[in-house]
Image (cartoon, rainbow over all chains, first blue to last red; front, side, top):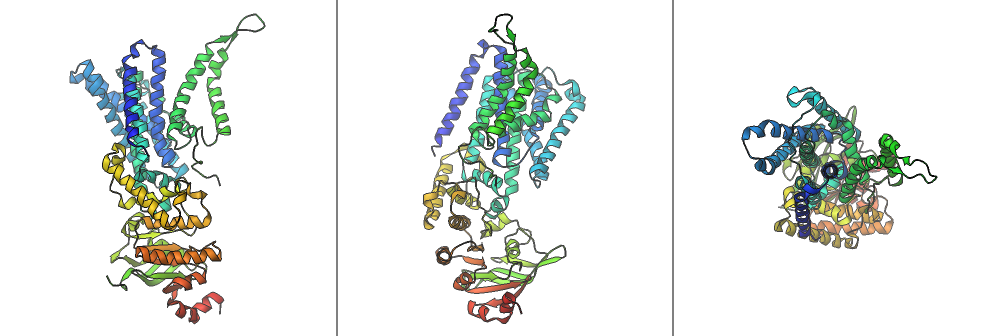
Length: 332
Length: 256
């Protein structure tokens, strides 16, 4: 186990994010937006992987935790920041990260609040409770005028840049990896495998599950903050059940409890809709002469193609794209 | 600490599931360093008694004391920390962990590092991890399992999986080891080897063993004292010779 290497990788990732950020002025804004969306996706997928993949709990409320973090940090930026009288630099480099952490902490509190009472539930039942939580958050946000209600929250400063996005993504992946890569961390897998045996070996399974929920929702909250300051606008509709499903799909596709696989799936699934949109605006030359064939139909069929691709992948690789070790859950 | 001091003491332990009294007013004890057996026909309540001792169930009535303190209200992981370890009737290893990791996870109650140490990965953390890896290998080595250390736990043969369960239980550093039908599914030569192993474990680690077993050859062969259950009640207690001659035991097994 070459462990100090891990920290070196983290450092390299942070430096690269910083360097990319420094030259981001010359990058096409649409492209930049997509790339940062990828970073946010990686944070979301990796943090959910801790809960769903490694600890074996089925949470369907990740978008809810993301919303809590997004609204918390956005409110800090729109309500508190203007009264501080800070300069633009201080706002972006000091206030913004602090607001991300604050958003993460509030989301973690929400995670603990949901997790603690509902962790007696297993599988489908836990999924239903977390799903309900996500919906409650969305409906509350839709009806509270102070955060914009159904109109959404506008005027969020766009502080998010490549450094913050990929810095956070690297930190998330590193944290989840480092947490798991220890004797104590192996307990998460043991809890997922067999709770009765885990308790008999001295593991406090409830505490493991709450820890997973707390850390997972912390990073979901930070991802929400990044997202808010990336788009400059928040709408409760963006944190619906479908968003949670999207993140769950990333985790499943990446192969439940594979670090790299889930990162890869997050990148792929964030790029795919954009790629299809791009493809839809092209046309291919007609080999028989005459007008070129437009690929405009792809634009309309985008979501169908996306779903078909998922179905195909699940049929061909039910254990996810990556599975170096044996599938986590024996099918027998 | 004298050799005959009671490590585990059950006093009038009763558990009811609805109208069914699975274990009824059982009083028994296991002494320090003793090899004790628990036998009885199918459905006599042996595994239920194990689950009561390890905190999976709480007794409806009566009390259980371990090393001088009551275990009421304590959860299984806490009792493991106090020194009760067990194996399962149907093997329950962690299938997604390797053989060595199965053992390392069981060091949990004795870990010095906290979760955030694994994120900082400081010197002390790394030293402890290396030490634990070493200790896991050492334990596996005693049972000739070290060559499988990186293999997935479920790839082991049935007998090796049973032995790995014992290694894993030992990693929690127990004072009392509960073995639930360790000889199930073993052939005669494996059973002989298991008997040697249990004696060896008791001597080497200086712990008490309580063993549930159907195989009379194994029970009579290694146990110093045997408790007999029938329909949730204790009907006899004594040395193998006494148990073999006890008319109530003979009646329970052969019918009147």
